[in-house]
Picture 1 (spheres, rainbow, N blue to C red):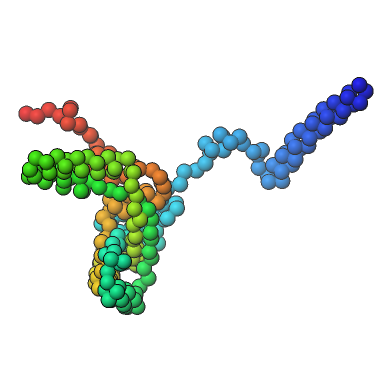
Picture 2: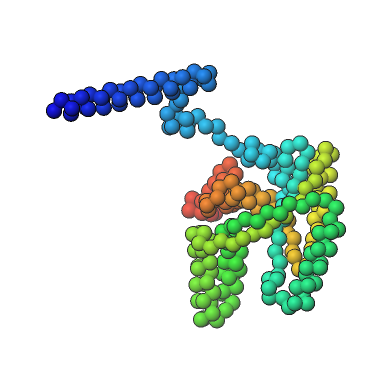
Length: 248
């Protein structure tokens, strides 16, 4: 009985001593840092500073498909697509490899490559199917409309994704945007011609596509695209739906 009382008393004293030591150590660390005591997690979260694209990548503007960075730096983003290499014959594969190597050797400026996985966008295919479905006979028409609905649902649910490759063409100058735009277009033409022999297609992105790509890189896993919000009228002063429109 005496041993039990002594054991319980020592346990209480040990717990109280540990709590006091932890409080003293936390106060000491806060004093050495020269700042206030640590804030609760919720309060620390509310005090976090939100960062923009300009803070992360120094992006100032997107004009005519060109990414304008601070310090007179300009970048042109291009989507890259090619024929399936493994479906080519051995002779064709050798030709493609030789053409790709020659294209890289003749480059006089640096090119950055970017590969990312993105949700498949089937909106263009859906519109084309719905437009041409009316010209088809009965059974084919039903199949076309069913295919369009399937592709539309795939886009909305972001159920499918594919890898997409990009090339970034840089140009730095203090002469302004127009000069940089002309030089970037010249570089794009040279690069596209050089890669055409390797069966590689280089397509410059529009401003909307550039903004969507930046949004995708900063918000992995989210299905929202800025271009969709613009098409819905988010940049308009007044947005009027078809239900509220009055026709004379």
